[in-house]
Image 1 (cartoon, one colour):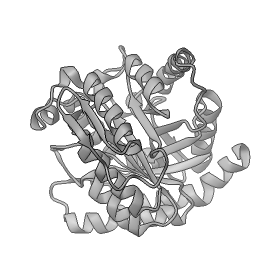
Image 2 (tube, one colour):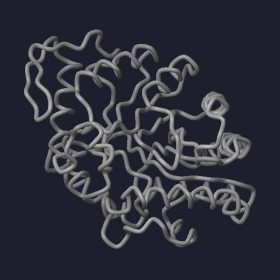
Image 3 (cartoon, helix red, strand yellow):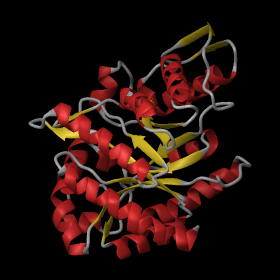
Length: 339
């Protein structure tokens, strides 16, 4: 079982952004020291009501600040971008990190982002597929000639290439069934999203397995899942501390339109906290969180759990406390049971 830390790098507008950056780096270094296996940096643009650090510069900095953990670009909104730019940026980070990069990609869904990049949200599926095919070719071929909807490669080259051969692992994030089938066809694994309820994911994992069978591909050795997680001495204390910050974040998700990307019947992320948390979040005492993680592995097959434990103005001290409890009291128990 592997464990990852997900950092959004999103903060309230009145916070000292330099202090936020220093605290983010401290949290990531602590995660490596406490036995985490990966650090994920998420990505969005135009993030009001929050201000946010961008993904690739943070991963580049972390390539020097850490020595062991994998660095996950999780996820790049690939439908917004041009493949040659992303290929060369990620190849550089893979080299800087000595081959520790994971390439996570997904469609994106926000109109403000697509409009700003001159892209078309209605064509996002086609754009992602074209860009991903081009990305793989640029990483594995000397020269690439290929025309896409929003790019044209004429004997284009990506040099230098990533250290990992033929290229870094490609995780594809997906909420809906068609996107899950795309993940089976084009990715090394489905990167299970943090928003869907576990009950929905149990059904969707069957969609994924059937799609793999149709592609004649084996079930991946690594099945990552991202979850919102918070741990304290008791469940009541965990809810008391994390609840207001998580609720604020998911209200923002709903205003951005994230809820409408989820399965029918679960498209309102602005619910009362207890109803929102349901079987969606991992929250509780060390013993309760341990049990929930073990159940995720047994019921779904998750073997790389990537945890979001920091939201906007949650105090840095609480994030550090949670990291310590996870590394010292939760991970050892989980690994004793699961290996």
